[in-house]
Amino acid sequence: MIVLGIESSCDETGVAIVMDGSVLVDLVSSQISVHSGYGGVVPEFASRIQLEVIGSLVRRACSEAGIKLSHIDGIAVTAGPGLIGAILIGLNFAKGLAYMLDKPLVGVDHVRAHLFSPLIEFDQLSFPYTGLVVSGGHTELYTVRSLTDVSMNGKTIDDAAGEAYDKIAGALGLGYPGGPVIDRIAGEKKNVRKVKFPMALMKKDNYNFSFSGLKTAVIKHIKQHTPGADPDVLYSIAAGFQEAVAGVLVKKTVSLARYKRMKRITVSGGVAANSGLREMFSRFKDEFEIYIPSVNLCTDNGSMVGFLGYHLLKLGIKSSIDMDGYANNTLIPQRTRASAT
Image 1 (cartoon, helix red, strand yellow):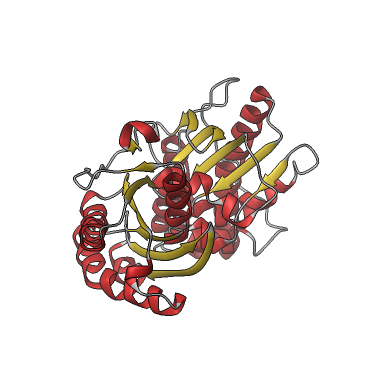
Image 2: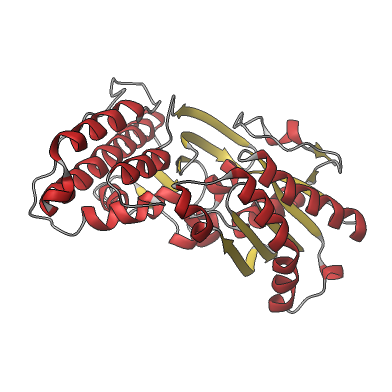
């Protein structure tokens, strides 16, 4: 079975060709250069650029896979959550293509696509597992028992971790996106003392996240210590902030895995590319099997959509041609969003 995967939930357009569960082609068109001057994603620009590139990206993907559009057996597309304008570009394109080709269509939840993305790379990974999805728009903890049995155990009550990175990078004058640059600076001087910042909601059995208070504490510290005057101050703030974020993510994930008696932990989403977070999770490799995908599978991509779509279509799950896109993450069970055939 050949499945075309389309991802357009935010500022990246991802297109992939998946054959029998293996990724043949994975293409991503990034908009970072467009949005960096604004300090964040401009929704109108994101949608407009999605519209401009999606058709050519699909044609290129088919060409690189050595197939024609008529060879595709099904189409998987992100239905949400994300920027609704950008989502609708990909969703409507996929609907039109499915109608034209008379092929089945399945709407894929963006967060679930991240949640299952480690399965693409790690053949040894099996269910059940504790899954952390952490990105610019999402910070959530799940118990994953199968492709259709997923329960949310915790989520952010304010900012997502990646959003906090972007805001702190902006306050430090480091530009957008904030995650990669803070990660780099935090690791440059291991001998510089890190500023100790607060970690919120750390009571036992609380698996929710909050980064708003941390963000406020860091910005207050920045105003008091003017990082530009002393490079070491910049390093100490960046490293302290990263340690506080990673510390919360790791402690809560490990705590949930212990409570659920899980032996496997996955970490996915854009922030999973962070080297500090990866290093902190690696400290638990003797207790758990830790699965964190390669960087290209952490950021938004069509492979994760096509991969999950392939498995859903194999289960007989497909979506109506008139399905709606959605902006918010409600994690409604897949079978209530799609019709089982």
